Image 1 (tube, helix red, strand yellow):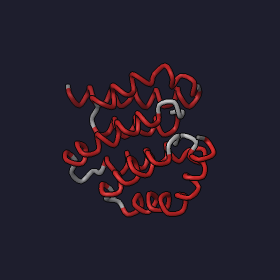
Image 2: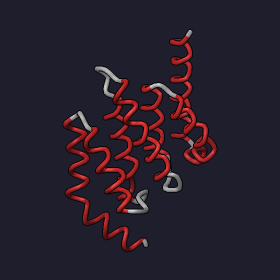
Image 3: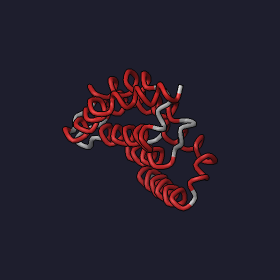
Length: 151
């Protein structure tokens, strides 16, 4: 029964992902539902939900959502075995934050101190680590300049 429930939830999230591809404005309607599913979900569902956030979340809730996912990384890393959910979630966090030339990052200090520096020690996959380092090194100046222009 548990496997069946997980399968149904996973199929429902994949269906929602397709619906949002066709109508991104519906993200507003499903945001609270997705946050609750993320909090209660298993690692596979968390990966799917983080992917939905990365693809469809606007800058309205990015900081709150990223903070939720980062806080949850410790628990995910403690439970996982060979399947590395935390790196996939981190990739989605980076995708979400860097979308549209970092327009989702309202505060450069938050992005550097609360996102990049917190996820760096949790990275296990060298490819994901390279993405995070490239963002940190190459775009650090741009992020600070954009933040100063916006604020």
